[in-house]
Image 1: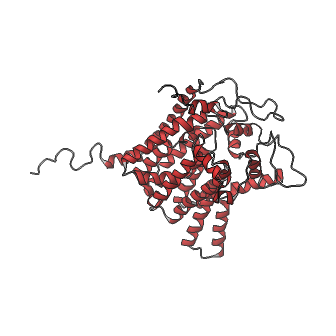
Image 2: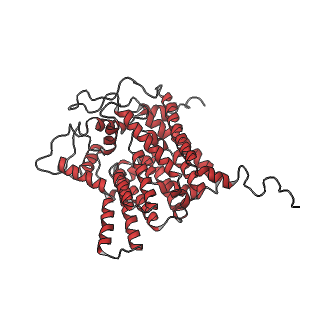
Image 3: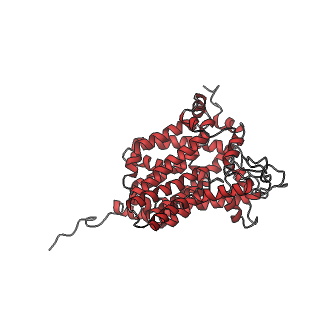
Length: 442
């Protein structure tokens, strides 16, 4: 008679790797994890608001409004939500009036930079989505834009832990990368009134479609991302590169097949192209955004400025309140160390997507931000998802380094980026976030 099996032999234990893997792949678990991440960021915002003696919503009964759309520069009450600061005011204003208060198209053509009531230095697409979500003004525009951000972020985080990533990066590395993304110094952008959430979900959605070789869906989503923000153009370029690599590996036998691939590649940037055509029609200037951004922030994008930046720009980037220069160097270091290990199991078209997206994002951001000391770069890193894949690949087997990095990110998230974002424009944020309160106490 066979001996009775020892307890636990022949089947996975309650905490076995197989059971944990199966648990982590369950859709309800993935959705729950996404919700936990968003709730954690919202709780962090509520706690950060307390540093300024503010509630989460400072004016529940006073919605953002333009009392005189033809003359008001900004909307009243636009910053009543603690997650609505800095650029959010421009997106709210665009959501309320679009380009209705812009001057007419110049008769002689040439560069067009808008004016005090014409917000051309920010892409209008996110605001347009929020305007639709507001149901014609029934829902306050800031609530509508926040809802768009939260839904987009929820879908984005859910897709992150799906098979498109786990089967290539690895299950443990995927979940670790998710943690590293949310712990990053600007991870809270997922719950703000900004363009990052929509751009991110369209980016990852395009990649998921790419793994399934659903090319027209890739073009649809990547093209939409290219219309969300200037660095979203890198998503369209990455998708076009994936189309090109796949076409080279699986060469079409006919001219019609090559024409179809060429049309796909062009379609990957349909959003940016449509926006440029609209600017030509409305303002007579396809580069109205570039010209308006340069005029608003007093800089001119330059390749020379990126390749040979002035020392004072770099010094400012390192010592400014958000230390963007330090995080820029750190991000480039992580990518250089971990990109091969992170992307080695991705197919060639998928690697092309991520590499072109990464290089395109850094190039576009660098061209515009180098003369400004790379202000805003901490948020721009969020679109470079291979950064977090690389971190996960490098840190999975290094628990001490992982713990140290999470401590550094969490400290900077709370004490610097979130604090400064919560304070909004003005030196009062510096007083709260950076004042040397310890002086005189030693």
